[in-house]
Amino acid sequence: MAANRLTSDNQVPTAAVTALPTDATVGTDKTVFLRLTAMMFLEFVVFGSWFATFGLVLATSGLASIIGPAYSLAAVAAIVSPMFLGAIADRFLASQKALGIAHLLGGLVMLSLPAVIGTGLAGWALGLIFLYMVFFIPTLGLANSIAFRHLGENQRLFPYIRVFGTLGWVAAGLGVGALGLSAATGLFYVTAIASFVLGIYAFTLPKTPPPAKGARFSIGDIVGARAFRLLRYRNFAVLMICALLTAIALGVYNTFASPFLGALGVENVAGVLAIGQISEVLFIVTIPFVLKYIGMKWALFAGMLMWGVRFALFIVAAGDHMSWVAIVAIALQGICNDFFLVLAAMYIGRVAPVEYSAQAQSMLILVISGFGQLIGSFVSGEVFAGTVGASSAPTTTDWIPVFVIPIISSVIASVVWIIFFRYSRKEPLKAFPVPAGASH
Image (cartoon, rainbow, N blue to C red):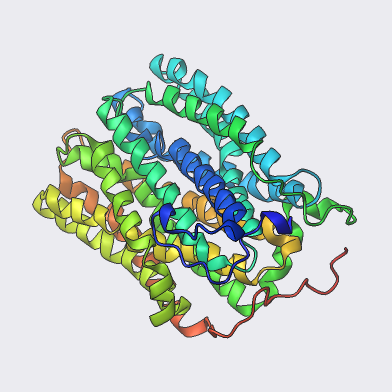
């Protein structure tokens, strides 16, 4: 494993891979870096090719009534699967193999979605989306875990790997938009192809054996219960609480951003949503500098608070029917996601014991894409059904109540974070020891 890690403390890359050191002593490290960036790029090509405009596809296919339930089921799948697969990757199966198997199975599910949605089979469509997300959601945590394992002590390099995930989402969004598939079921074929490519590629990644291999296995490991022991540490618990609250806003955004842009008359919704990912690229390369001059606590605070600002702009756009204001809100994606999702993963990678690495990253995905997404999509779906969905001739002002929800959750998260999170820049790597009572 050591031979596969990036080990030079003097390596300070820029956003461009070509800026990595090129001397012979770090040649292997550069190769590993490139392989990890390719993994992250493909991971988000898969995600971005369908998730951003899935609601719009349902709306144009006569299934607008199941937009809320579909995203809610996706969130339920995120609750069911990540901890389980994280526990397997931690103890039994190499992480790169788990990643590959999950994507290959997910690709098979995606191949069947166009026909099901095209024939209006709402129940089957919901079932397949649930099944797909059971396979896909854990791969987000696995990809992070693989990257952190091979970075070793050079956790600061993670943003330069993660930025390629953002580029993957951008490429997928622009590609789907250019093909005219933003609102068409054909985009699921794009996702299936990307899933198969990543599924095969995953098996070529650097070996990432289970860190807790040979440790005694218990029923609690099936749901990743050992990672819950980390909640006894104040900062980890506060992070999870604030992640849940902030993810409610993320859930509303994922569920209704594309239908709202459609209601504003925006053309090429997938392309416009890609502006958010371009913003991520611009902001993610600033993370090392932000951490140096602002610090982890305040950078994460900015990410949480900006979700509220984003939806305040959506309300302005809805009230005055100004699509350009909504586009500005989309462009805030860089701060909203980079300074929250990426930094949260980095913090966990820094402080969680290696034995619980995959499960701890999976817990973050569980909280964000599971419980947070579920609450956000379900509550906003109910509000949508009583406002926009209940009107025979809805206007953009009918959307305003939907956007009040994420503003409230964002403000609460920001207040909790300021009061209870205690972070020191001197906090050491793996600051949280293996919790007492854990079996090894």
